[in-house]
Image (cartoon, rainbow, N blue to C red; front, side, top):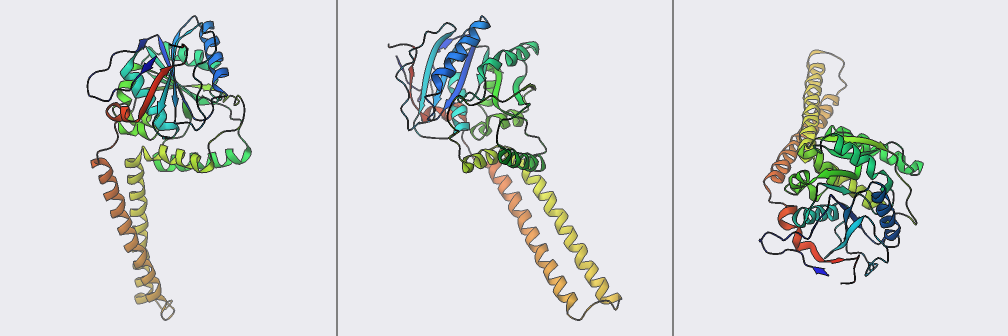
Length: 336
């Protein structure tokens, strides 16, 4: 069965409906996916629930399977959404979420990674909290314990500190979460989703709750994300709060400029009213401080113009533009 992405502006027909749709971005980890799907199906059976599974293929170099030779008991349908080019983890989630919003009918959407670190066995805990709050909150898994190396944890703590200093928000969550279709409708209408899913939830100010869940172990192999990819991922989260970052840097720059002015005034006071100044020292110190002051003013202007330009520029909107990146959609649970 082949389902094409919608290119024209006409409303799409619903592909399917279920109480829940699970969205998983995948890049070259297809050897892990059958085991992950088996665990998801087993978990849903234990909940007496059913779901549709959407696997977003981020244009993997490794070919995805033509179908899964599995017997599904709780998964009604399994779709493979292949992107035209590699866009990265977060943008694959953005396109998957926009596609689900346009083509499926459901009460809840689960976003999770495809390597097993977001354990399917923890889905009931997220759904329980989601239902207990009346489906009005986006429920995230807050990592109570991580399994990474000490070096990674050290860099991660440094990043969390930088994120907090620049945005005023602490980093506590990843992609593993449950949200309603109404939440999805809000998210796919903002450009921030293109950069980072979790950060966009905070940016849009959707109601949120967190459930402490330990990060699971990868099913097999090692992560495909390089150090550069991890840095890019972190900067993408910060970029969602560009306005806040710009204002904070502007205030910091203003404080630095004020200190420069105070320094120049102190140099003049020492030079004109006391005998403490060394010949030539006042001119040198005042010149250096004046250069710092000019640089501070120029940086402030740059922060202002960059922030205003970002607000005025027409950017990617998932609900409007996602279909241009959808290559093909097909079923993996049937030979039709």
